[in-house]
Amino acid sequence: MWISLTATLIRRRGWFLLPASWLVVGAAFGPAAAQEGPAAVVEMTTTLQFAPQLVEITVGETVEWRNVSPVVHTVTADPALANDPSFVSLPEEAEPFDSGAIAPDGTFSQTFTVAGTYEYFCVPHQSAGMRGTVVVSAEGSGDGGPGLDDPLPDPIPLSDVAIGLDPVLEGLTAPNWATSAPGLPDRLFVVDQAGLIQALDLSTGQANVFLDVSDRLVELGSSGPETFDERGLLGLAFHPGYQTNGLLYTYTSEPVGAAADFTTMPEGTEPNHQSVILEWQVPEPADPASAPDPATAREVLRIDEPQFNHDAGALVFDADGLLLIALGDGGNADDQGVGHGDTGNGQNTGNPLGAILRIDPLGTDSANGQYGIPPTNPFIGQAGVVEEIYAYGFRNPFRMSIDPETHELWVADAGQHDIEEVNLVSAGGNYGWNLKEGSFFFDPNGEDNGFATDEPPAGGVPVDLIDPVAEYDHDEGIAVIGGFVYRGADVPDLAGRYVFGDYGTAESGGRLFVLGEDGSIGELGTGEDAGLALRLLGFGRDAVGEIYVLANETGTPFGDTGVVLRVTGAESDDAGEAADVAPGGEAGEAEDVPPGEAGDASEGENAVPGEVDGEVEDEVPGDGVAVPYPVAAPVRPPE
Image 1 (cartoon, rainbow, N blue to C red):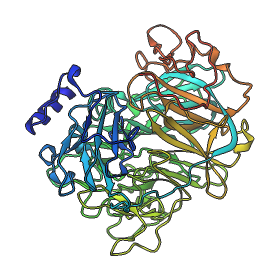
Image 2 (cartoon, rainbow, N blue to C red):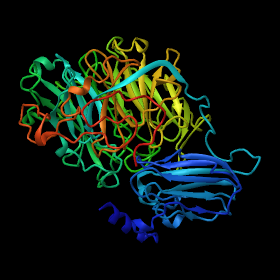
Image 3 (cartoon, rainbow, N blue to C red):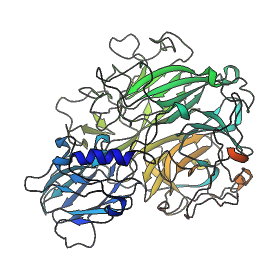
């Protein structure tokens, strides 16, 4: 369906989608340049991004674009092919250019002979904000374009902490969160974006389906099957009183099905989807085999989402037993577009987008009567302000966590084109978006791509904006993935330190980071090189504080390459203990799970084929003998 719709869209604008055998696999346009290779390389990713979004070169140099995603992309700077001509900016003497359809693994090169700024886009994904910029300087001149050349020039060094990664579960789709339940210390509950929650018995390695919400979700794949998406099953939190009340909460991306409790959409305009917080009840919470009764599902909160992206999704309970809910700015790019108002959602406390909410799910004094608004919330009684807001000024705080010892709230906020950040969040705080990106000012730049800058906006910014405790730029990654403060025993060198990472690229894979006391970032590894060789999707923490890495090969909510890896010491004695998992440490399947009982994945049709396909070094052997995943030199995932 996606190809048909894309072809229709493109033919209307005079650009034709060619048969696969005719797609661009490698092309070069413009006069040949006397150089050994391209001056810059840009990846076209599964996240519908050009990475890096901004490149700077000199006249006569060449940029090469590489399609590392499974879908067709283009590199286009032609107003005639744009939904909005303002997507394109060309120097006065420069000619428009268009790559045509670039197949997966294909490349396109362009040599630039005229100085100036070139704004370009991907034809089939322009409405999703897939746009980029090339700034071409005359030889010997400055960069000639907006923004900062290199906001944070110092590279992230290798940390002095050595770790190992032991596989404990495979055969998942896109695991993005894992947590424990009060009273069940041997269970790790793993959230899969595609709609399943697995209950993993850490003592035996047995994984069973705990809850299946896949039938509630929007159809995943923002550009069709097998493509990137930020929607899905995004969050899970167990009530602190779970052992007596059996309550848990989920965060799902659902089709528009009812009136929203909050909306930013203009009248008559339908949102892309709705973010829904649901309450579930387990009939026998002290029994590890007991699962949520589907009949107990209760809708707590429903929020309209303007676009498919920036959905956040984290759910955590604080020390007071109140539920924190992370919401992104609604999507698109630069906090602009339909559903973002005149100034964006991040700085607008009149709606909940771009904020962290705090509610009492057992209360009833909210407008919809389905939850309570804590009287200690920072904006209680303020006219025109959403009283559920705990903190605001976020772009996409996809993951957050609370340190069980200090009760500090750690929030990783994914950046726009330049800066990724980690914040320590307090009640009432304004964390800057979209006036700032990280510690830098941010210029939304009208219809062109926004950028980080040292120059404050003409109207200034509030004096109380809170800068991140750590940040890195897009020389080091493309999307921060928040983790946890380590409170386990396996890796003493990590004690009390925040572990997080970056989603990564197709060529290098994700990266694992640790924060120093001075705010410095180090990369976790086992030698001089580091890299995950998988896309990093999330982290998990068990009841005793051990941390787990959640990843897959594609970065999309499709397939069965998703894995859960436990962070251990570099010379872990536990390597291979996952051999008892049946078969090969595989996840359970959703079928045939009776209400109130967890499904068994140990045999028959309920087993998901879970071997990690491919021939990379970190493959889990098919004979069921699990070996540690190395933190090794970057390896491109199998084609």
